[in-house]
Amino acid sequence: MTTALITGSTAGIGAAFARRLASDGHNLVLVARDEKRLREQATELHDRHGVEVAVLSADLSTDDGIGAVETRLQDRADPVDLLVNNAGFGNKGAFLDIPMADELTMLKVHCEAVLRLTAAATTGMRDRGRGGVINVASVAAFVPRGTYGASKAWVVQFTQGVARDLTGSGVRLMALCPGFVRTEFHERAGMGTGNIPGWLWLDADRLVAAAVKDLARGKSLSVPDARYKAITGLVKIAPRNMLGGITSRTGRKYGPK
Image (cartoon, rainbow, N blue to C red; front, side):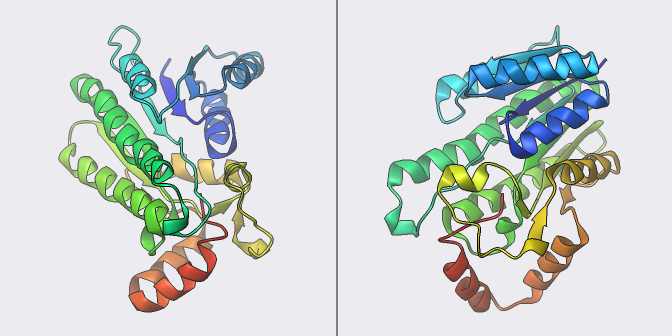
């Protein structure tokens, strides 16, 4: 039986990945900061799906937290076959209104943790000739959105670059770029969502189902849902100054996952 490790597993997209992978028969390693929520989630998934579920309480904004997850990913006796780097957060406000410490923490979680955990996982996967990594980015990666968008753009470029490097190794990497998903993401960041049109919202379980299919197809970039595929297509041909104007008006209030 294969094992999947999911960061940020206790809510939103991470929890949807945990439900889907458990229902598919994968053993799980769940990673988040809140150990109580982790254990409750682990018990529920084990009882419902009969899979083994381990928990690892780790704060990926710290070296110790990242190191703890690296150590688990490097365990050759109990290998991880699928890594889902999902942990992330948003900051409310314009660039100069956000404390620099918060911006640096975002880069730690969105970039350094993704870099180090991907390296820790794929080293063993390459040696075994199989495995997969899903790095959760955002459609915000394709528009000017300050540190959040820049960090997610890095995730996309990094993931696709490593996917090319590992072509033919049996290891698949994919950047997942969701749009607006009904999760705790915006609430935790103190971001209002009342001005987001209803048709832009995605269901987390459907999003994950599409992502799993795209990984199986060998895609290195997944933008689930036809609505967001159309939006990202338009973004590629729209003038950058126009995009900057739009995101400056909306990005201070909310942002896609």
